[in-house]
Image (tube, rainbow, N blue to C red; front, side, top):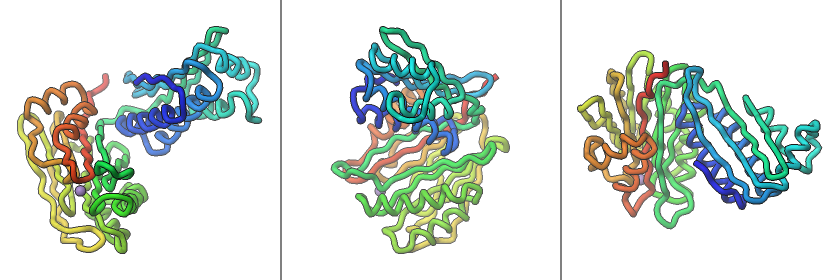
Amino acid sequence: MTRAVTGQADVEALCRAGRALSLSLGSSLDRTEELVLIISELGTNLVRHAQHGEMRLGHEQTADGTHIIVSATDRGPGMSSIAEALRDGFSTSGGLGRGLGLVQRLSDRFEVTSSPDGSQFVAVQAELGHRPVRFAAAARPYPGEAVSGDAWSIQWQGASCRIAVIDGAGHGPAAAAASQVARAVLEGHPGSSPVDVLSRCHTALRGTRGAVITVALIDAARGSLTVAGVGNIESYLATGRKERHLVTQRGMLGSTMPNVRPVEIALDDDWLLALHSDGIRARFSLQEPAIGAARSLGLQELANAILEGFASPTDDALVLVAAAAPRVR
Ligand SMILES: [Mn+2]
């Protein structure tokens, strides 16, 4: 994405896009937060010192793995003096170009080009490694609410990843608080099995509104999927031309935890998993033409199409899609 940067709101939008891109490519949370800091520092410098600032966020996949590229450009005059300052030996004492030392440390490659007409800063986060699974999420809160009670989470452990969709009961701040409690449990126990982590969430959610959660463990090396859920998060798995709806148990974590039976399924090379909250009507097929057309454009386009086409106006809505990543030679 490319965006003109005129104020802090632009920087925040770029940070959100960067976080989503990084997680969708399988980066760890730490790497993702480093990327967000890089974007935030480069963007803030544009806002403070430059005119006609623009930022670009992209990624490329090579045999070495995936690289995320952040570039900030301006047409002078402020950033070129920052570039000069950096070249002359940058001091972290603050003032002009404050934070660029941090960007330099966090980046795997950092390049500065500058002339009186403007300057360009390019930060590359490399060596993400090739991740066998891709993700995309699309979400929005209940119309009129500032926060959503729906949330998603992704944890990697070697070649396997565990993903979850959470719907805090109701909507608004109390629902969001419940889903954040669950998300913290998921992040704190990245190696726990789906059933084990659901039961940890159940304990942690006592005293909150409660939440329904589905957890899916994707082991790309073994080619297996394990899904366990409590409550009405819907899960669809499409493999080749077949599509199935995965059944979860009734209940509400925080108050009613049923005896959870995980479903185990073998995955082939071409699979697609969609998990969504009940703010999205569960009456679409991943095979239908509009969905198929969006899917051929990319995973994010698919998630956006599901949200736009099937979100209900009376609830928070979230869809998370995961698919096998194309093999890299
Ligand atoms: Mn809901």
